[in-house]
Picture 1 (cartoon, helix red, strand yellow):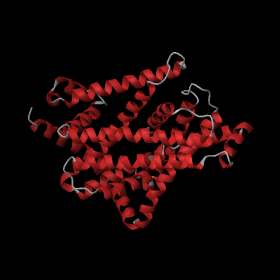
Picture 2 (tube, rainbow, N blue to C red):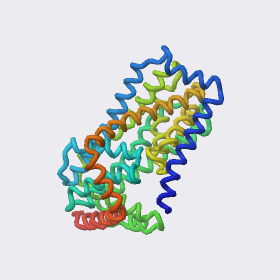
Picture 3 (cartoon, rainbow, N blue to C red):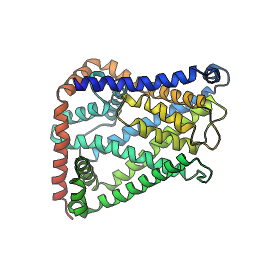
Picture 4 (tube, rainbow, N blue to C red):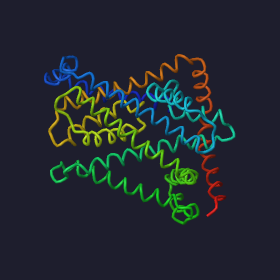
Length: 360
């Protein structure tokens, strides 16, 4: 019952947020006029086409990043399979058929095809999320250097200082975690002993320890991650430029878009539905030096959602062409969800053993 209630809540929350945004547009005639402009001659469809191409390229880079994470741990994997499972997983993040999320589906498929390396398969999903999240803060932090903080709003200054702090702390933490002696250090033991958070730290440090021996792969993966969020930001910029003459600059969109994606990563709605739109709306009207209307902010936010849904349709094509196989796999995932949770714990123990055997 708890699982069904949580699933229901994950759809009610985005529904309520989207209803609020649509009500905001509908309650003001000026807002309605801004939305109607989309279907007028003022809309630059070439710019919107560039936006979709940037978003598609960004999503493709995430699949290549996952592919490199998989092959770097010795799992036999083909790039075409990374794209196939990647698009299917992206679609499932929105639809969540049978309660199966995209990451769970990808992890199960990879583990099923490589039973001897199941812990490593699970680790690739965890590391992919971790690297992607940190790259969000790094791109935002770099773009924030272009802001004039003296004239910025207090909330924006606080946000920028927070992003800089997270980026710097992450850099220091990763540097320490990459040191060979860290696997047996007292600092690691202390962090792993913290109630509730210790298990997260253990999984994080164990996974980093495994990838520490592959610096070339990590360098390429890091560059790809920065490219992912830069391209998503460019997609939002071209979208805003295609819809409105007055819009944020490129660097401002490189602050708005990654931060909005951080909010969208909060697992309270499928694919960040609602939370992404709300975050873009609030940041769109707060970050730019030039005032932006709330109507244009909501319009761009909903337009960006349309772009992401368009990308999810590619996954739908994969689904319909392999419907029987995918449905069977999702049924297996649902049946073995608890097994996959144990796999995560198993991966921790496996990485811990690997770290102890690693020469120092």
